[in-house]
Length: 387
Image: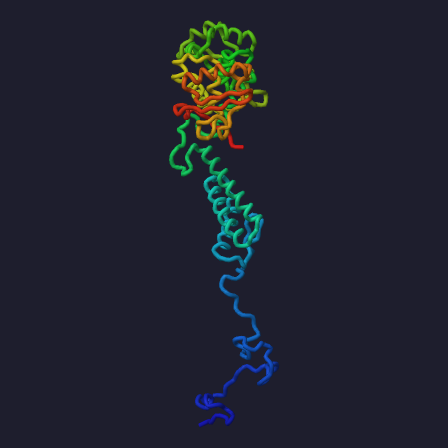
């Protein structure tokens, strides 16, 4: 039986094998200095000179996190805040790649950013971070208002704030465009001529042609519609196949074809009012609803008052109540240009609308008209766009 070498230790003797271990020529001799300060755990033991393992939550692998052109520090604590900032940066970048905007999602992201930046500012005492947090709060509020304006819904997105006849900013802007066109291109002066011009523009908006009946004319507060039709045709602005009296006699089953040359498409196909078929019908229906509204009819409101009602309906706050954006009122100059010709002629028209219950709390100065629309009128409102 083989015997262990005399130099072997007890363990080696028991196993009958010689222990073989790593030998380093540079290993410190017994009692030599290890280079590790006294009192440090592990001093004098193998591996004592190696760096300690990185603590949990240290610098992760990969690119550093960024948000709003800021690098998120690896040492930022708590780690939940650091992770939130990195995640927000990733989500904002992903949002920018979306094919379609989602204003509800964008508002939520800005709200989270504001909350995270406020916490970050509290930790590091950075005034600029706090300013960024406040800007994020404003961006969130703006996105929510834009969402409400586009959809007509309340903040929770569930119930319509106002069940409007015209839904959405595009149709609201089309309504304002038609009124502006009638204001700027009416060939005859006076509110009755402009109200009739508006009706004809809506009939011929797409191709420059349309149909008209006697009932369309008698539904409007016009003193002498036949005479007005005659003046429009004499000016060349309107073309009809017969006499003005024939238009008044035409029935819905046999309407009179009309042509408004200024609305015909140009050689390149361009049109002054680029409406689609559905858009024209919706805006025309909305105009008819306003002009023939029950209380305006019962009070026998004048053509100027009904034009003013149309103009005010397109200049409300988002809630459909107060006039002007955020209720600051409406400039009287464009109102007068549409329905009165002179700002001094507006007060009697305002009185007419107030008497008809179309306008409340009205106050008119040299340059502003403030007031509110009653609840029954809210569905006819077209809010102004946000700045």
